[in-house]
Length: 247
Image (cartoon, rainbow, N blue to C red):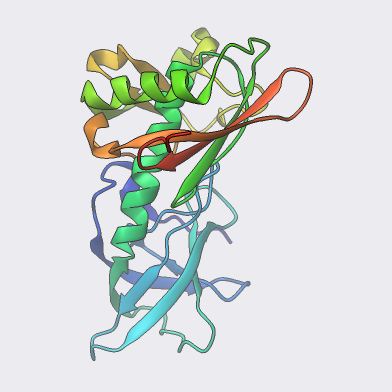
């Protein structure tokens, strides 16, 4: 039986604390709640860590968060040695905010990179300190320096980042909004979540289920640490926080 979790992070990435009630214990030993602010591993972004606070003040440490039988069934995996809560128990949910915020900044940075390098994406992974985006990129004129400069221009422009929803029909009428070469958003759920950068998506707009900052300036200083050749026309860009080291 699949359970339905109210997924709070889809509308508010900044919700560091929330309340939830235990619906069930999953077959893999994870906790399913009626609602959660914990992001589940998806789209190259790792799941949230943190802890649940019980009524007596004790903690249940959460090692990671994953999806269950459906995208709306969120399963919170306990760290080793943690006590299992009771079904029906009310908990206060605390994500590791410092980690989440770094992932939000990085995920938005990856979207900005897809603007600086407007080529089909062949892979991506969001990390706390380093992320990567792979492009089908035949043009070898893109350098760490030139891409970093373009990225920082986009960051400093401080464009708003917002969430919008479109219907399956709207998406099917505009399939080019997908930048990934190999992964398509699921159709059949009724609607698709878009992350838009700039007024009305003037800078970028693409399907994404991840967590993002509200304006590009929050990304902070970033740079391209490395560009790797991963095939005849495949290039891997590694994004890191901080300024580009001087040669």
